[in-house]
Length: 227
Image 1 (cartoon, helix red, strand yellow):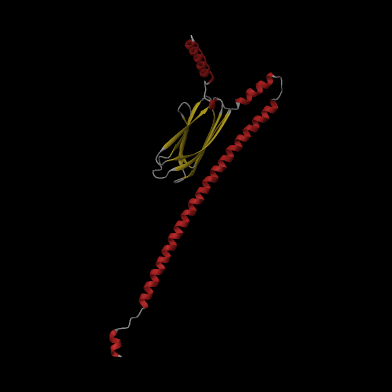
Image 2 (tube, helix red, strand yellow):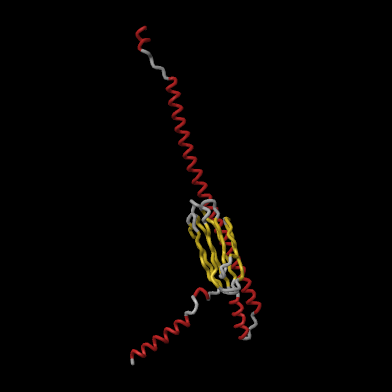
């Protein structure tokens, strides 16, 4: 009897667990913001996937921080596998859309045209569900509270904050790219300057040596005997 009771209790807990965890936790969040720095090897392509709810605003920004010619391929596929942002070999690009059908978006970074240089990529992804604010408004209306203006103001603030965050991220990514470019140029100039200084020193030393050898006079034994 005890075994049967344990089996029933285990079955009840298992069914509750299956019903409570019907969706992954990240699919129910009202807003998601992700900032990655990824390394793409030469001649390879990497894809990243992000779940987007129906009706949510999906935004992705791509920026080549350093490596090679500073460009890479960037493409976005919707949950149906359709390329909504075609491949382009560019230093930076972005894509934004309001999603109709929920699913996983695919963000692909292509470095196959670069055979020798790897790339460091800055990837920024946001998923904003503005419908959550509508649910909040309906809940307050059920309580006979007129806060439509308040909710509208909060929604506008949320959208403005999201745009500010996107602008700040773009500025940070450009700053990081410019800093790495300056460091690379500084290293290049220093290396070639040192090399040129060494060449000049060696050339000067060789010239001085041969000029001194040219004017060096050695007395002959015959001239001494004649005197």
